[in-house]
Image 1 (cartoon, rainbow, N blue to C red):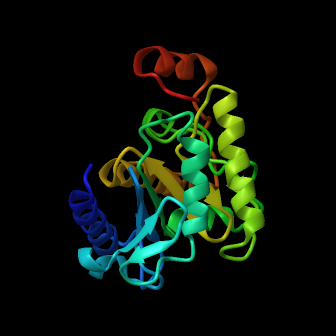
Image 2: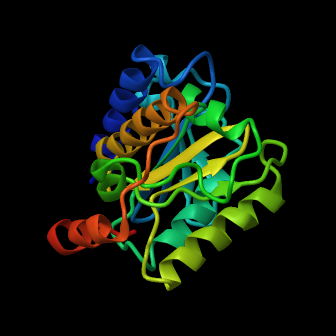
Length: 221
């Protein structure tokens, strides 16, 4: 994806997420990894009102070279790329939101993962979602924990495409802004199902069903 198209895609996806309530106010950010650096939404920008020309442009050393001031979460995005690319070389986009149902699930003593294997599409399209214990926004400790979770799952043969920052929101990544948005949508919908059934939790998919998804669709669970 060239830079011109990446700028347009970031704005298209940001507007779509905002209009459908996946992000609100100035919450959330989107980045794209270019061959020679990064694009990321500006700090405190509304994702529904992005200007392609004002997106922050950074070089490979994270020095800003153009655009409005980069989101403070660029350090986290850069660590996600560094940890994920060895297991998924095509990884090009990271999206962070404060999606309502995901955050709601993380408020009350979550386990090590946000959700069990509730649906086949969650298993196939999202995979494991480790919960990163609460740290203030931008805390370097959280950045290190995210990188460690990605590396541990990758080394175990179950590369992940999402982590959940407790009380803050999910970070998801994939090959393009459109694909990353699809991961986020599936994650948020599954979180909604998890909340709707919380009073009487359903049985997750069993190992036989998950093995079938691995064989037929390459699920990484």
